[in-house]
Image (cartoon, rainbow, N blue to C red; front, side):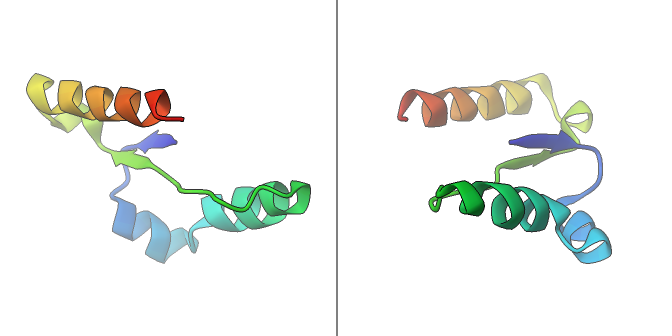
Length: 66
């Protein structure tokens, strides 16, 4: 899970999505972890308090389900 100010599509296009290349392919797959999903939350400071709280509740629900 990452949080950044760069919009997701620009990050993936401009930088070539290094999160999945380095961490997923280069680290996790080598140690046998195959089911991965990258959660990226962009520019939370520009969102309303209600939207940020919704994001946090969604994150909490995902981790509670593990």
